[in-house]
Amino acid sequence: MNKITLAKKIAFYIILVILWQTISMSDIWPNNIFPSPYEVGEDLAYMASDGSLFFGIGTTILRLIVGLAIAIAGGIVLGVLMARIETINQTIGSLVLGLQSIPSIAWVPLAILWFGLTDTGIIFVTAIGAMFAVTINTYTGIKNIDPHYVEAARNMGAKGTQLITSVLLPAAFPYMISGFKQGWAFAWRGVIGAELLFSFLGLGFLLNVGRQLNDVSQVIAIMLVIMLIGMAVDGFIFKKIENKVMSRWGLR
Amino acid sequence: MTKLETKGIVKFFKHDSHNLMALGGVDLEVEDGDFVCLVGPSGCGKSTFLRIIAGLEKPDEGEVIFDGKPVTTTGPERIMVFQEGALFPWLKVQDNVEFGLKMAGIPKEKRSQISKRYLDMMQLTKFADSFTFQLSTGMKQRVAIARALVMDPDVLLMDEPFAALDAQTRDLLLVEMQLIWEKTKKTILFVTHNVAEAAVLGTKVAVFSNRPSKIKKQIPVNFKRPRLAEDENLTGLQQEILAELRPEVKKSQ
Image (cartoon, rainbow over all chains, first blue to last red; front, side, top):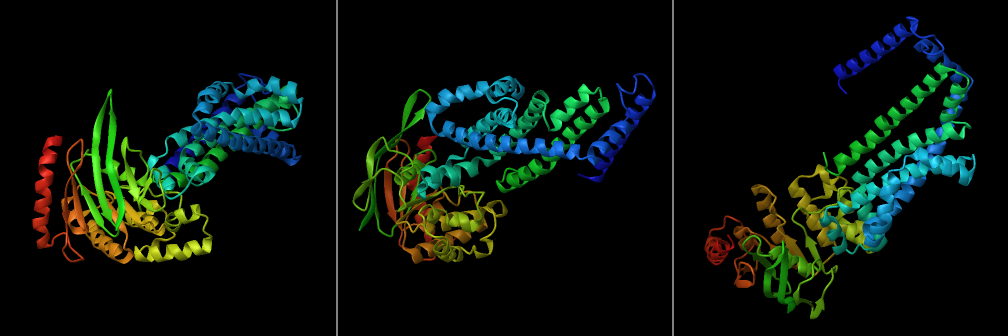
């Protein structure tokens, strides 16, 4: 990022906070409905000092990681099967497209009935919301491999599982990384949504507590945290991997 | 001794609703250690012919006979070098070169021993740890050739490997290719649309006719090596090849 872009960004956020402060001071709405940025900051500092914030972040991230890991593993296996076996693509493949259109949050009632109000239920919602994005991108990636890669590999004696792990998956990786990125986005939405409804521990839980206590500044504070974590994961982890993969694969 | 033989290879191309006969019964006999250059009008199916020999495509009729036995699938004794190299971008140069050895389950130490020899031969030692995106087109083709040689195939099948190279790089590789052939004694089938390239490299130049293609003429080349593209005594030969080729190109248009 060049200096001018950075300066523009910083200026934008400063103006935004000043505007927010001005509106909250203008008494259009009472403070318990529209808190000032200072109050939100105070709430954040308080939750940080008693550790509840970090405990909440840790709980949510842990659920996310487990859910996303399951989604990636399952998504890759399903995507490979769809790409390699036409019958699976024609049958399960059509179902995957359908399941992909179900928002993560719509799995919550089923998760509660099946798993009760447990971590397993939340992880289920997180994983199932993310898995099909990984599946579809893995499938598309394998279908779009330059056929010369596969021919060269077969000619040099690669077959079966060897062909899949040493050629198909690495060759499809640029697509798969978009699948992981989408999967992460769905998982992030899914885990927070599930926590809101399941209501124990985690950032979603803290949001819900804020609502129950009529504490608008806590709600906004947690929303900010959710946004910042999301931006950090997108901007650092995925962008870095993507850049590296794109240049190495000669796609940039 | 006949290393490789094709008998009546026929191949149809699917073309909208009708089938187009691309190869109309190609017969070719290749002696052990031959360097056969295949030239022909574009679209005559010479690349397809090479792919059929590699076992990457099936002929509609006819058979490929290797060491007296018919072959229908790919095999490590017939290794293809693709036009664009088809190197794996996720692997370093050395790992690309060792790919076939790894697939064969050869242990790491032995692999690097073997690959070292061919990396040296192709002057790639300095680039062993590079990724392919860091290489020039000429370097990539060197890697592709090293990757094929490592398999120690009896027959090397090269599909216009120098078509994308600039003139200087190509001249260099034309000389090196002759040295590699002399050093390794491989049987080579080399598809090209470049008559000068065929004259420089081949012990024999096979000219394909227009579709449905057959081998129209085989011209032996007996000049001493290393030959250069600008060698004057090759001019006559090039004229001879062109004289066979020109009417076929005309028919194809």
